[in-house]
Amino acid sequence: MNPEEYLKQKKGQIDKALALYLEAENSPVFEAMRYAVLNGGKRFRPLLLLASGQNFGAAEELLLPYACSIELIHNYSLIHDDLPLMDNDDFRRGRPSCHKQFGPALALLAGNGLLSMAFEILAGAPTPASNHQVKERIIEDIAAVSGPRGLIAGQWLDMSFKPDNPQLADLQEIALKKTAGLIKVSASSGAKLGGASLAEVEALEKFGTFLGLAFQIRDDITDFNQDQSSVRRSSLPNMARWLGPTASVQYLKDLLDKAADSLKEYNIKSEIFGFFINQLDIGFK
Ligand code: GRG
Image (tube, rainbow, N blue to C red):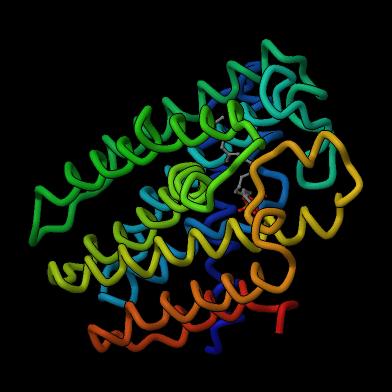
């Protein structure tokens, strides 16, 4: 099976598993949760977790709960990010954002619900027979990247950003916390569940971090190209605006090269990982 077909098939499985988790009840909160999650996200993070786990021989049944939990956390962050008191976006994935559809109070609760449910799923997730402690480590990793030193810190840095004299390092810190953390933990959790060695886990952490930074700069380049004239957008932290069009494309390429090198260094060969890298490169060749 080629990588494209593999990922299409896995995406179908992830979507099905997410729908099953979210069918638990028919309350308004669950309806808002389903609306936010089951609406065509790319599932980049759970796909990366599955690909990473399967690369090291983990069974899909073992990986899916971890993959879905990370996707739920990602979706909670998108709902909250879109709220009027945060980024105030009316649209998400081509349709009204959760608060536009259900109002801010229900959207806020749907986000909280997804975050708690993610940890409920993690607590009940299977553990590899060969290593019982790995689950605890992974829950700790996921909590750390989603928590007040990770995603939440990144969101605050993003919101309180002052565009007067930004340094690239400041923008990188935001991207590392806001975007790269969940992507890194997706890559490393799969490897851990597959019983990868410490060195291999480290390689996957580096790979995920570079991929995560590339993900953000790619998004920044797209935003910058679309919104050059927008005054509101020009005050947001955007690495493409800071670097300029040529240097930002070069930076993206450098990050993708580093992602590939992180794997080569440990002799990890995977067509799927190469496909993830190429996906982020498309359009900028
Ligand atoms: C509210 C705690 C809190 C955090 C919000 C995720 C986030 C932090 C903000 C979203 C805004 C943004 C532009 C983030 C950069 C990462 C990014 C491009 C997210 C969108 O992820 P995709 O492309 O989305 O994976 P889909 O829709 O495919 O799931």
